[in-house]
Length: 182
Image 1 (cartoon, rainbow, N blue to C red):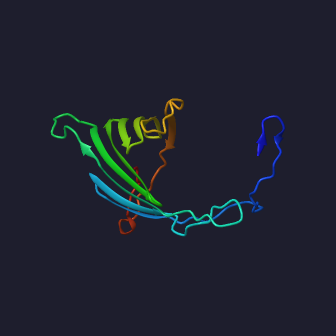
Image 2: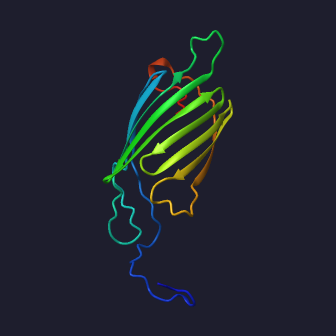
Image 3: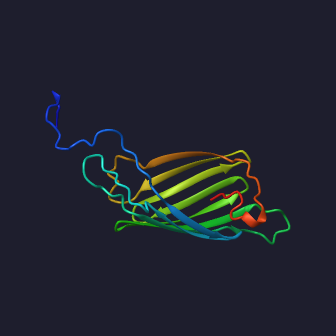
């Protein structure tokens, strides 16, 4: 469709839909937790919206995610206040015949967090983070170990910033998750 010297010279075979594209997308999930352990399940794209940009249908397949993690304090029998914990986690995702399994853990010391993850047959991920009363900042680096690594990408970097908002306690009769932080 594009000539290197003359630019766009051939017409496209796509039939434009016209206008803008937007759609409603429904998701539902649940999590069960206590102070040490949590497990959850999420179903995405329940209504299978049409994401086609041309005339025709391209239904977005439903995606299912299951996750679990634990918060294990280390050295809890020490006579000193210990703020160290290990947080092993597993995340499994399935969508339209494709599967992804992430297995990893974080080590937390006070407001500092470091972690390592492996995404099945694809990537090794290293993370660092700082959590204060007002904000969270994190950094992760993904190293591709699959055939997708063509020797050019060198991995990917991600920086995240989150703000901790004040959370008012709900009355006990309505309490589900008080100020969740996952």
